[in-house]
Length: 242
View 1: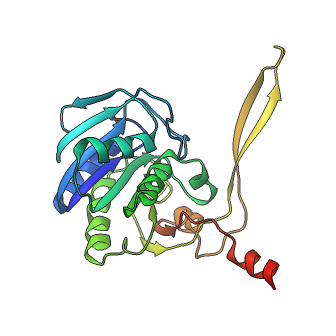
View 2: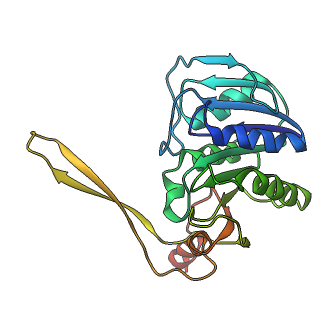
């Protein structure tokens, strides 16, 4: 396999190194990552150039690596163009911090995976609440073995993989899940400076059932959630046309 690896934490991120090393067991690996941290940039793209792309020392497990001075989705496009290979799979991550429920709307890690899907390539996004947990590398190798062997990424736009909450020092199992309901909440608080506000971040938790990625995350399980690029509300179309 030819595998392209991207992320949103930047070319020097530890999670990128772990994912590259794990993916090397399954084929020829190329890395295209943002030059700088690009978290929460979603699927942003640069529409007016130029973009600086620098060839860097290949990350361990890769044959070539580039740093892209742009967004995660830019890195996907740059990798496909510059490496000029027929890629079989795109991997994004491993993000430092989970990307569950409505997080996928904002995540640069998931945004990069969706960019690959738009361009016709299957993609898997990986996120870990704490990239420094000792099991992350071994679990990634294990998951890639299972996902690739069973071709779970076939006929799916993106598989969104999340490791459990950092309170768990080992994984209790793996669940195929749906997106949960929890929300990222930002409170705007006015300061004494004109037109300036401070932001206070919190998470609004909602009762989740045991098939959600939030439930898996909070109960020690890896979640694998198939998500689609097509956001069309087909039920609403049917209702209107009746």
